[in-house]
Length: 156
Image (cartoon, rainbow, N blue to C red):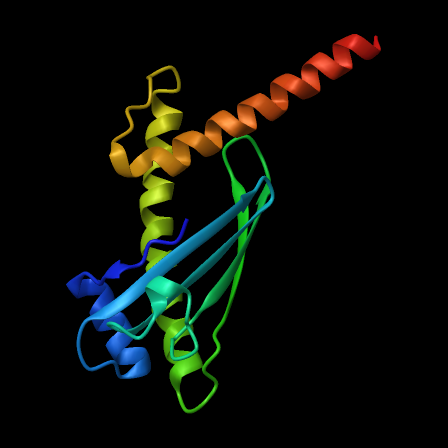
């Protein structure tokens, strides 16, 4: 379900820098998860331009593809690409640079979390409200493994 709400100050700065919005924006983020990739469609348009009704014709609308390929039990290859509907000037480069900077920050945190998990592998994970997506993803993947084991057992 799209999240179309008035933008927070940090997000507003990103969109103003990329598309020159002059005030508050209506912003959305739609995430499509598959076990091997994630598609993230974000965007914004000036407040009141119809984003709530699905009219995004005046919007900055980046679309990201994130390919996730496990390497080992504790390492993963992570490939991503970004496209935007605005192709004039420096906007595509600016969107890419800001996205790359954000992902680099995420990478640092994720690597620190993985080191912590490796030091205490039996320690339970504690999720906060914003962790719901990660928790649901882990549960979904665990169900896929369980179904696969059951199918393998039934085949024997």
